[in-house]
Length: 194
Image (cartoon, rainbow, N blue to C red; front, side):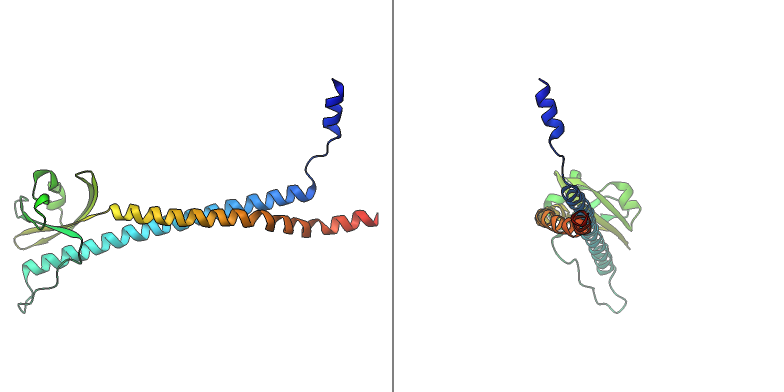
């Protein structure tokens, strides 16, 4: 029984070069994960901010169109893929550009309409919705957009970043091995000289 214990003691552990390579690969992978995570968060923030800004512009444009321009011209309306709701001064939904958004369930919360200009984020018919409301002379307009495309775009970005992570992992190991060889070369020369 003592023989296996002795054999285990005699078996050498990882070489210095192997330990340095593992450490360098680990550090490289951690840094890559941090960089990829930061890139994902930046893209997510940019997509959401762009959608919010577009809705705010659209709501202001629709409100200006209902108010009319001083010279009688009407500004162009929303940029597309949105639903416009018109609320009266009392906050009651008057009409929507899509009949399915004229239901009681599709109405925005009264506090959002009362606080216009305002933003709102929630779910309608189990779909994530982002909305911007803007006041005009006869009430409030709200521009609503399906925000699920942000999730779809983020899923594509996540897949791309995952492939980049896999590529970095595959490159980290051989590069770490080469770097560890370079760092242990002086020690090997010193050992040979001794």
